[in-house]
Length: 254
Image (cartoon, rainbow, N blue to C red; front, side):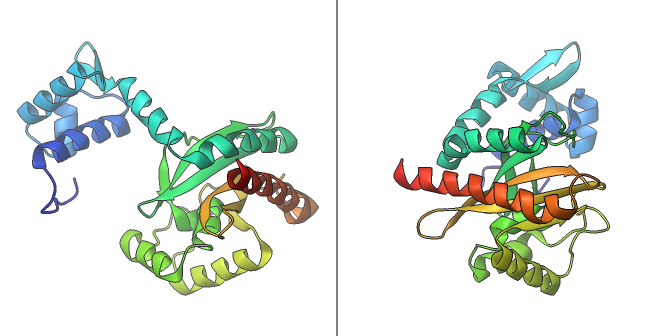
């Protein structure tokens, strides 16, 4: 549980901690969840009962899991991002063209959130899902976004979120990260070389509006054995540029 700020409501924070803790567990009993959250069992039971009444939690015997009401809220939140509606068909086309896993990400509160994923016929399963939040510095998508944020915003994100290692190839030094972001700006795309998943490379390009503000990023992910050579250095950057340009034009003229 995170420390409370003077402007938050403790009971609401506890409810959200219970809901998020349950989501991370997959499913759990009251005692198990209370131990995980370091809360009294009676408190956890009361909050779970309230969440169940509102449809955010369902029960299977003595086990609890997140209910589909949460999916409704998440779907509504996603649709509020205009870039999602515009970019979704282009992400799907990118997956079809490459045969790989194509992704759409936006930044919120210093983290990257996957808004859409589309699987081509040869796509690998990486275990992530829509709505999952990740550190920006450890993904090509995140670096494509960071490279086009103002310097003070990047510094704020690094100060708040840090640069933790996700794999042993993740950049954890701020000066190295700055150099990488400069390279992204120069070449127009970002590379994640097994920095988020071992054995996986990812190429990403930013989505920017007519004023140059970054709205998100699109990427292609695949096994290192397929993501190399001319395909990595020429074919995929070209496809990413084409698809992100279409998104940018549609956002501008829709």
